[in-house]
Length: 95
Image (cartoon, rainbow, N blue to C red; front, side, top):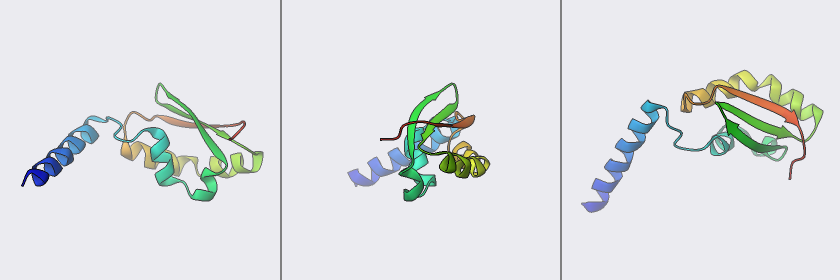
């Protein structure tokens, strides 16, 4: 019985946090949910500041490809949290 109580409690806290717009997963974890493994190999999460997720991309061709998907990705991220306002891609080193 104790495990059911804890499970329900964590679910309810998650629902309340999601409704309040709190990030349950950080932007980096959300990106892992919405991007493919192939895409993840070519990006690096830099920071999340003032509602902007900043991502480095290793080549101009991947930068172009991700910019084509930007609106769809932004809609998915905003669906998870109202704290995210924009996604910005830039060329940079990815390790």
